[in-house]
Amino acid sequence: MGIPRRKEQLTASSRIYDILRQDLVNGRFAAGEKVAISALKERYEVGLSPLREALNRLAAYGLLIQENQRGFRVPSLERGELDDIAEMRRELEGMALERAIRFGDAEWESELLAAAHRLKRADMAPEKVDEWEQLHARFHRTLVAPCGSVWLLRFIEQLHDQFDRYRRMAPEAQEVRRVLDAQHGELVQLALERDIKAARVLMDDHIQRSYEVALRGVTVEVSPSRPG
Amino acid sequence: MGIPRRKEQLTASSRIYDILRQDLVNGRFAAGEKVAISALKERYEVGLSPLREALNRLAAYGLLIQENQRGFRVPSLERGELDDIAEMRRELEGMALERAIRFGDAEWESELLAAAHRLKRADMAPEKVDEWEQLHARFHRTLVAPCGSVWLLRFIEQLHDQFDRYRRMAPEAQEVRRVLDAQHGELVQLALERDIKAARVLMDDHIQRSYEVALRGVTVEVSPSRPG
DNA sequence: TGTAAGAGAAAAATCGATTATTGCGGCTAG
DNA sequence: CTAGCCGCAATAATCGATTTTTCTCTTACA
Image 1 (tube, rainbow over the protein chains, first blue to last red):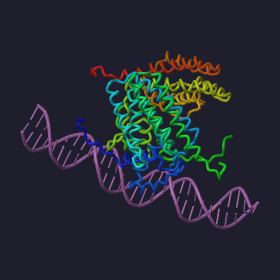
Image 2: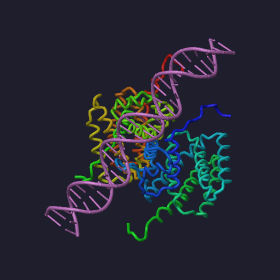
Image 3: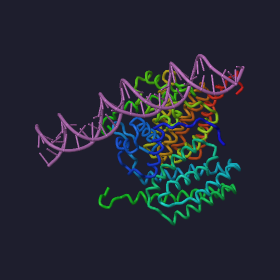
Image 4: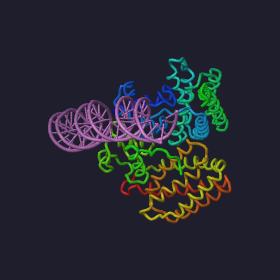
């Protein structure tokens, strides 16, 4: 099955880009930290050129901050920025969901059910959290996929990556997590019923609750010893 | 006046990035064309490393398409994509304008009047068109600047660059141009009056008319000899 | 006449070394 | 003391050369 296309030969740049993007989103770099290029070079066993190309891409994407003549930094976590990201997620994902429900066909319904099922079944044990995150991201992508705008999808993806940096820094919130997981199922339900209005309301609530979880990662950051 | 900040020392990468971005937006590369890296190297008198870093950034930004192991291409101009870009501009700039009118202060009003005036006074002679484009972009930026969301502004900027690629490819449309220019003044008027609803309607119309101009650049592309 | 294989050229990607800039310490003049 | 300046070490940026992959053209064979 599938087109017998030539095997997609990845470059070192693209490989390291994917890895770094994951690691940044998953909070494996301290927020605000300076990126030591030569350290990364060893840590990921890659040459300078592909590494720098990957860093340049990540900066253009918004997961790193580039300062001329002084390299790259991991963006710090700011409450104001999280507010902005969450607000934009509400706006754009709401818009996309509405369109997806309007345009999505039977094939979409199947994929949506499948994605939701896989996510529900997935193990959330600490060592399998990366896998769960993949399925979670995929579910949300599937939900809005048939919205008809590649640019809208692109922006949403970008915002998701930004948002997840905050969420993954925050402490676990089991009670809220249960509610959020249940909402995934409800979103599918409303999508299949083509209830645009209710779906938007639920999506808003879903993002709002996620936001409140993510927020705990920011406010906790304030050190009690330093008044800054 | 201004903070006595250290002089921002540009890197070769950043310099070439700015230049290429301009040239891409202004249509100085044929749509769909393959980017010959070594040709650019000579054309812009820059080394391979900074050039490649700039190209990587541009691809992440969406002004180039990167294909592993076979370099970079200039995106082709597709009607469907222009539709998407224009639609998103309407949505996002409408949203941003509404917020800007709500949050903008007196300082904003001054800057807006100034930007509109500079644009109106600007010469549109063919050899000064780059300057006019700068002022035009700046006017639209100023209009939505106080919307309160850096991400929204970022997306709008990106869409503007995409949109302008199409618009600058299209043949001149003097009559429509006059209407569009007049609308700039009317937008300022409505912004100062804080008439959110009317401003959004006008912005929608403004983008729609610009879209229709830009569209002429796409449909003309179709060769009469080939029926595809 | 069509298809596949392969050599050689062209282009992309990467490496290793070099150059330029910044950041930090100590030193000195006021 | 403290502000400012020098020089050194660390780091970022860039260069030139090399390796790897793709592209193109030719030839062989069915």
